[in-house]
Amino acid sequence: MRKALFWDLQGTLGGDAIASIEEFEPYPFSKEALELAKIHGYYNIIITNQSRIGKGTLSVETYEREAKRIEGFFNAEQPLIDEFLCCPHQSSDHCECKKPKTGLIRQSVEKYGLSIADCFVIGDMGKNEIVMAHNAGCKGILVLTGGGKGSLEAFRNTWAEHEADVIAENALEAVKVIIQ
Image 1: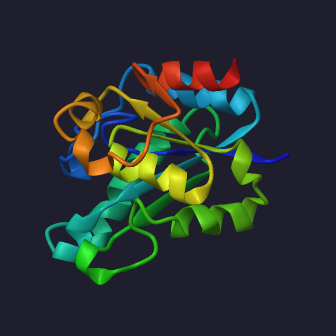
Image 2: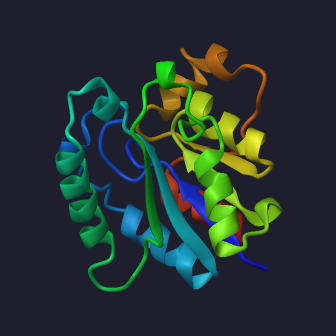
């Protein structure tokens, strides 16, 4: 049985939910969350929407540099991140990879031979991660870091047709719930 955690990046593993990736700084508990997932046999796959690339306000080169910096931090002592996937599109592009669409999950399921029923999507935006989890057929965990509290309160209407399987204080608490 091959299983994965599909992680949102900004607002979930660190940084501000809507800031540029250039401002990303990991939360103090994020590396431990990824380690715990690995110990329990999960692939850690980051899926991030980076519409600034499509809008022309973030270059592909800058994105790639920042993605390498972040991956280097998390993988410094051991390989914790298996894949770092990005949708560079705007909504108007109608791509299949922008969350809450499931193109990047489908790609990962095929590449790693994953059992989707044993996978989780973890993120701070219900309209993106929880809806994506539902669309993909896996479980969704909303974390209260980043935009999580706002997603659960002021912006709950943006994903009103869906429920999070779990609501966790942060990424580490999410993994603890998964492994129990």
